Image (cartoon, rainbow, N blue to C red):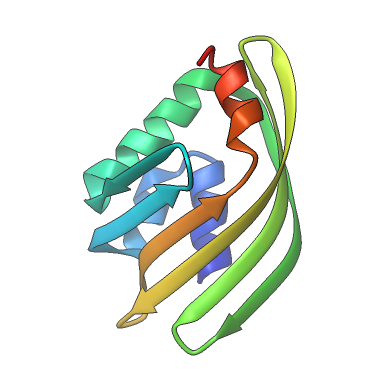
Length: 117
């Protein structure tokens, strides 16, 4: 489930992503942003679509047990004309079969520089 959710988010499919998470989902991009709920999910996805192009990703590992999952991926994107390669660890907590927490850990310094911060 976490992998399907993440694929929908990275491919810009809000309706599919929304269907896999609780209405009070907590979303964190560690060191950069934290938001809540379906509107927060939409905000993150809209921001990504407005600032990033040429987005693609490679999933390396998927681990899951009970109500927890972890996904290791490499995300490639272009922001402001700068090509970025981000190694990402994504961690998920589920409640009643839906994602209620998602936290991404990545090198936010390179992301911030590309965003002009």
